[in-house]
Image (cartoon, rainbow, N blue to C red; front, side, top):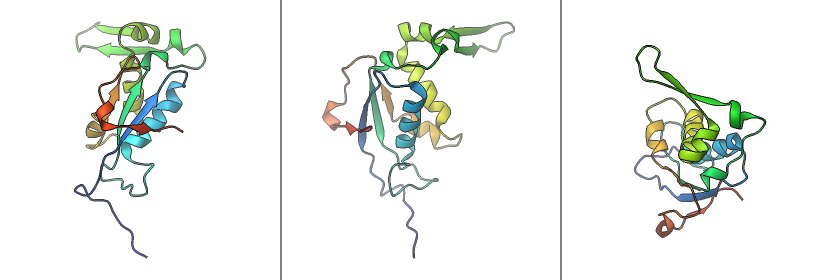
Length: 142
């Protein structure tokens, strides 16, 4: 029996859409990361980028379990002494809710050269409207 490996030239990237309203962040991020990697396709090959484009809408309505809304913190460090800053999920939900989903998905992608290309295929939008209707995305979660 032969094993077929996907090639970079023959891979087609489909478009998927996810409505994040009411979904738990970690479970949503796993599904998005698997779609970006191509783990849900029969032609999955670890060393080839076989994933799809993923459009996420309603990023501000994603849920977190427990008391993570106020207790979970993101740290930013500029490199200067004493210049580390902490921000909570509630701060990001007001200003940049796209960061919450993007950061969670980035943490679930592999740490290799393919991951930056996979992350560029993730499009996260705050509300219902997105600019990718022309690509006719199909729903990722059924």
